[in-house]
Amino acid sequence: MKKRVLSILMIALSIMLLAACGSEESSGGDGGDSALAKIKEQGYVTVGFANEAPYAYKEGDELKGVAVKIAKAAFKNMGIEEVRGEIAEWKQLIPGVKTGKFDVITAAMAIKPNRCEQIDFGMPGIKYGEGMVVEKGNPLSLTSYKDIAENPDVKVAVMSGATEVDFLKSAGVSEDQIETYPDIAATLDAVKTGRAQATTATELTVKKAMKSTGGESLEYVDNFEQPDVEGVPSYGAAGFAQDADELREAYNAELEKMRESGELAEIVNSVEFFGDNNLITEDITVKQLCKG
Image 1 (cartoon, rainbow, N blue to C red):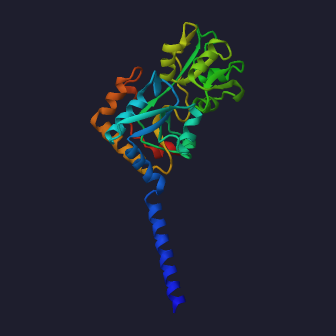
Image 2 (cartoon, one colour):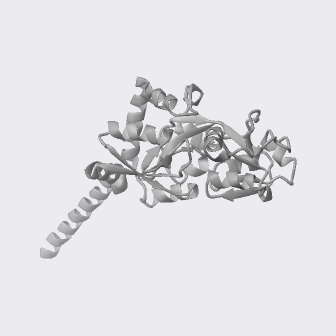
Image 3 (cartoon, rainbow, N blue to C red):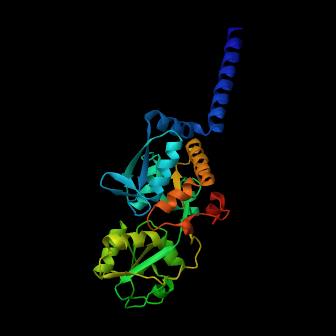
């Protein structure tokens, strides 16, 4: 009799444990629920960014850039007043949010299928095209990625981990022509010193960099031909860990309110180099962009 009662109790306990596990999985797991709760409890959110102006960068002790302004507004609407920034190399952003070093990465990162396999993106906030910088006078008449591909002697400097590496390859540029550097300042310096004949990044990035650090020896290619490759234009969004569903959904809800109220457009237009052409007016979703 005692053995029978003990067996019944063991079965009941097993059922309770299985039910608890099932409930946890259906709610998104500890990561999803605790991420938002942790941020609200501590009163601040930690964001990773690559110090890439004009998207997200640090000036003195102040975080600036369009992605930062969008994130600050969204989190403030969620009741989180403080945004703490952590600088990282571009290639360290995704690993940083995956391991919990960052709560979110805020760098207007382009939504791409290979990135969607590693993190979950919030709804896109802005879109942007590409740009190129060359030596003053453009002695090699480089106006497109195709021009680089057709001249094997040309070296192009690109920020490591940036989408431009794939864009260049898709346009026919060979891998041995592409040299990667940790940030935009380093790619510009490579062209200044003759180690590369061109550098490319998003049009807004290179325009901002040219104004602040370009000097008189470089030139922005005004007649640059946008590459006819998948992923251009790019749609930038915040990135979250794949188990932080509740946090991401709360962020998306606030961003949607900002879009409908006009607050998002006001923010985008308030940042130098950005304008109405960077607003997303077409019907595009993260799901569509993740499929490629």
